[in-house]
Length: 199
Image (cartoon, rainbow, N blue to C red):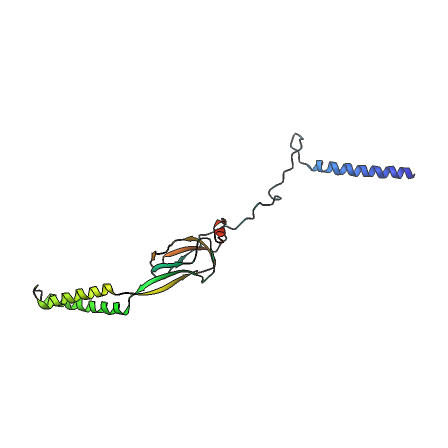
């Protein structure tokens, strides 16, 4: 009786071992001819080599200058991450000085006097007409030599984002509302620009 139990236990062990070997073969897919098909992992179970990155759904927004002026300094480059209100550029603009304003007013007054004199006394040898013409020329020369005032104006980032394009260079003269850069709030699929920002 004891020997029979031992034989029965060995038989059960062999049966379990055989079953564990045959079960994977039974689950293996076969084609119509009965040939076992190879098991290939699908993309669902295969980890991605590189994590996916978000691609921009739009081109972002243009960063524009509100003022006219010449580009004096630039504080950004492509691929740079910026914050809202961050200084991007400095422009220098020329403003008429007090002297220039006074000379322009004088020139306008002298021009009106000369035109009135020319209309009433058109003679070429009129001494008053020659004097008025000389005064006009003298005022024009003074105005040409007058030095304007220089003032700095600034361009800042309108929002948080990444600079994806730069449209200006040092020395460029910009009119109001000129686009100086392109700003995207989306992550870039191409990280080349981002890597260049740490150089």
